[in-house]
Amino acid sequence: MSLSREREQQLELVWSLFSPQAHSAEVGLSWFARPKGHGSVGVLGGFLGEPVPPALVLRLAETHSLYFGLNGVLRGWVVRPSAASVVLLQAVVIDIDPVVDDGNPAAAEREILDHAERLYGQELNPDRVDSGRGRQLWIRFEPTSVDSQDAREQWRACVGAYLRRLDEVCGLVRGCRVDTSCSDLPRLVRMPGSINHKTGRLARIERTGIVHRGFHPALLERFGASPPRRGLVSGHGSRGGHWRRHFHELSGRARDFIVNGVTEPGRHAAAYATAASLRDVGIEQETAETVVRGGAQLCFTCSNGLSPAAIVIPGAAAFDRALACSSHDLDRV
Image (cartoon, rainbow, N blue to C red; front, side, top):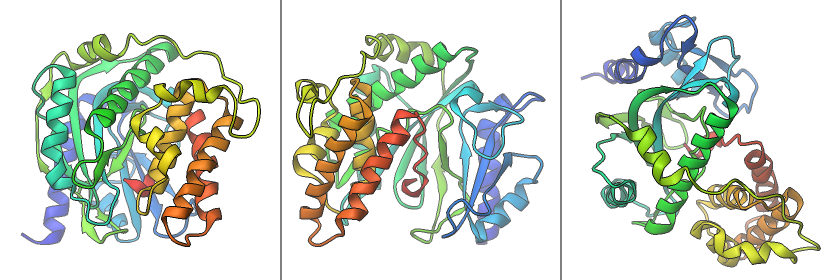
């Protein structure tokens, strides 16, 4: 099979798995294209099937990094939808990231899926995806409408609690970790059939799974009943103050980043996960920023000469994104 035909088949597969349930005059699946090496200049976006035909979307893969959203959003939103635009839930992503040079996501996949099943309480049969760098498990479920900000926030918090618990249980598996930042509703994933320009490899769906009946209410029952987020906790001074009292509530990944730092690759993902965990236990931005910077300085020590500025700044920016519940760190997908 030619590469061009394989890419077309992958895009057709995406359409068959996700679009029929989320394609109407009001709702659609969004796609997003960012030029290689040009930041936000020349960013394109739309809905699968319109206004750009699927074949033309794939042509963009020659010069752009391509992504699409798994959940249905209101039409009319430009380029990258926000959480408020999501009106139809239909998938949860378990993203398996290599965090060391010899990390093996394919080998880690089965063990992580076993833990995910035990936490959920039932067998799972997700779509298994090679993103061109890591591995992803797409857990599809019956399309579920959300029509209020409370319902959206409840689901985001539920998925976040599930992923953080999964990360704590799994820890480091074959040099890989679960990305705990994938709880945002307008979650973008790399488009199967497109090239991951960071590695030069094709992203592809390797095996399709099933639609999991009852997954949404069952996950809410297990992970959606956690107490509401407490008020912001004041830091009272550089690296000191009350945040330490909540250290035990942070995710295992966040605790490890704060205490030990991480070596490359993986510092950006770890900084983001730490910022999100601090946010979720109610730590105010200024304090959390200081804590993340402390972990970043340890990254500098671990990485033997990596510029401190290259680590500290992403840590601060990560909390800005986490606080805004906008976890599209596309370079890591």
